[in-house]
Image (cartoon, rainbow, N blue to C red; front, side, top):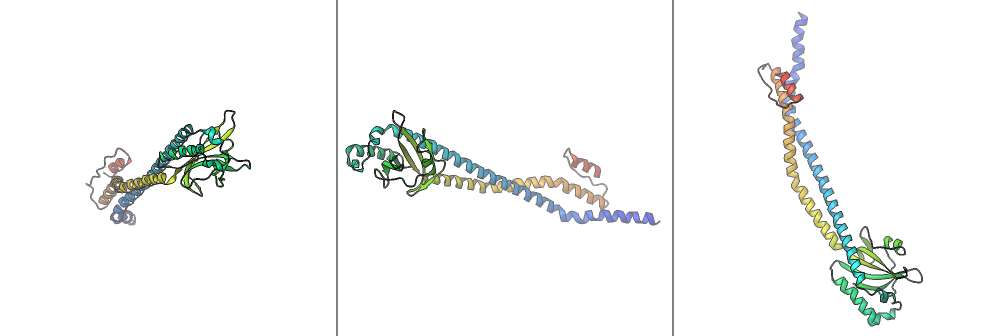
Length: 276
């Protein structure tokens, strides 16, 4: 008697929590899955946005560096480098030859609003880097010392054998630039001078800010789509579990004719068939 009486009570104790917990967890599972997928989609969109912006910025800077190298090569062909290398006395700045070469450099600068300075440099007898001809706002004079060269220029000045472009923007006493340099050798292989060109950083940074703005706009617009996709995924994943739980609850309540309707071709359908 005792054994037969305890069995239904034990089954009741084990099955009762199903009906008690179903209503409490059904929405919670859907909500948690939805939030998880929305967060995952937003984080993914953020990563894609960041990578896209960094890629666009890298490509922009590579294009600017290639353009700078091309402008340097063209500029060298327009100058009389033999004549420029002969200018050693500041008094020569008043000569017609010096002014003519300086005007050539100024005309090159005026061809593009991005060019801030175009100048020629060499080592003096003391080993210092001095300007020969400079063109731009507040140009340096013949013999003025370049006291603040970049590390790239200082390290490669005496061994430069091809065009060198700074890897990043360089800031000196005149401002922030993307600079490039081309060596000029004499026929006997001796380094005569180095021609440098500075592109203003503002135009490049402005384009980068535009890229960043577009990337942020794309990211903000992707958030509603991420929420929609997250909600659909959360609902689709939660629905079979909710239906299985509902089937267990209905059987627990004595509705033995209830059928769980799941067509998934996996373990969820096997569970539904077991309940049915």
